[in-house]
Amino acid sequence: MTTTVSFVAHQDDDLLFMNPDILSDVQAGYDVWVVYLSAGDLPCGEGFPACGMDYADMRIRGERAAYARAARVANRWTFEALTLGGHQVATNTLDGTRVRLVFTFVHAAGGSDQTGDLARMVFDESFVAHPIDGRDPYTRASFVGMLRDLLGVAGPDYIRTLSTVGHREGDLDHVDHVSGAILAAQADLDEHGRTWIRRDEYDGYVIRQRPENWFGYWRDEKTAVWNAYKPHDPSLDVWSWNNVMGRQYRERVFEVGDPWTPPSDFTA
Image (cartoon, rainbow, N blue to C red):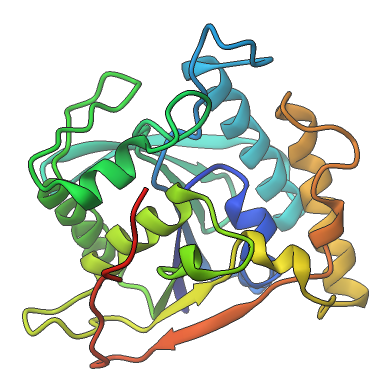
């Protein structure tokens, strides 16, 4: 049984930037883990249509609907709390499938906070991130340790992240995309600073500037899955992100044993 683990910053990054690859894993019957490194929340009191934990929950419901559509099964899920690296982490498994979603609820960047707690952990090893659902806090070391323990439990054949150098693209990527990818990449290093499990990096916002490279069945399936998510996210309208349904760019692959170091030019 092939197992894949995909690390993304927000509830929708997987659907927009890593599909149709994750979607094809689901339809092949693989053991599929998707890890949301932030809550995908927005600050309350700033005029957003939804905020805080309420908004995070809406987006989670959207992800559940999307993966039920991807697997072509009923939208029924089983909750399980996993203890990883000494932290209790919320997970949902889609009934009758091998699809598991993992939620950390770390505060995301957005609104008046354009840094976010993922980036703060990247920049400051002493920073303490408090998940918005009240679970135990993380430092950089404990967050990376939790992710590393997750990889040990899942035992993936390969993993996915967004780009660790997305800040260098002409259409600068979201700070959470880059910082989340950096933290996941750090969890994927052995004691010699080399890649432990093969890791594929996917481009984020910059794909809007690139030509379509997916057509036919998989483009249609990506669109159907995205349309299952959209009604649950009040920040979106009927046209939101439709222009990337035929786009997915995997730009960098780190094979087992490849060296990797965090980009020295990444700043918030």
